[in-house]
Length: 326
Image (tube, rainbow, N blue to C red; front, side, top):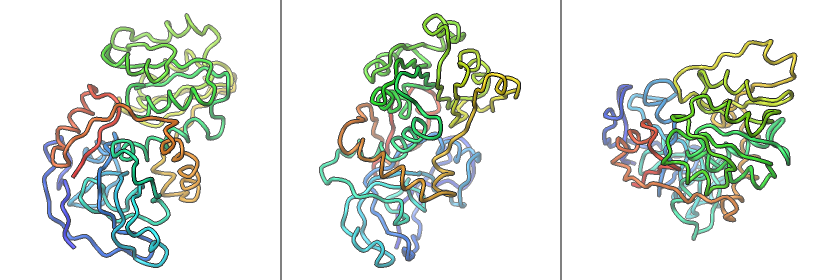
């Protein structure tokens, strides 16, 4: 069947997106065909558009997570989902009117679940849950710092960390216009990095002994700054590189203090450990469907205005989550 997608043939700026009519293959045994209600916009999509993230093509169709309705199943495995409203992760890009998705990574949601919440939640809720619960994780009484805290994952992490019993949550934001959103989500302290580039000095004023956990999606020079305020036995989890530069750590900054710098990608987990990813989704999704974690700041764009959505996320002026509606 034919479907419409916002695709690109060459890597580059947001202007490379164009409307395309493409052929969608029939679903395989392990897949379902989905009519997309809305797609989430993630920074990984920006990286894919720039040629820095794996993507099949050309034409390239990006987009990771979505909300939609199953209209066809490739086998009996997915037949019970036909007609059901679901969220999940696609085998084909979600910046489209239709996509193919693996049966193992789509999940039924309530019919009355708000469109913006459903579209915003899959990657946000799963990544955040994993960041705060895997390996060392966050323990009650821990002090946490979150980079890019007014973004989708940042605001989600603030809410989830409160529920897990964080003693304090320090939110780093890029401009003063984002302070209120972080505070409303439950941050204890908000630091505007454009006004206070030496944020470790301010953090030490509140936490002279350091922090137990830091969530870093920026990397670059921020890693060295984070190490200034990471207490012995603490952990930095790196899950992005929004600065465009990798962070560099010397091993002697870690071993003598038993500190850890680890990386995480839910995309990699979906590819290499689908069962583990499925387990995280089963645990995390109820936080969204029950309303325990809310997605109050969601900006809606038409699918066909994806260029504007990408300009907004790259400019660092956006707050919360951006979604595309066909």
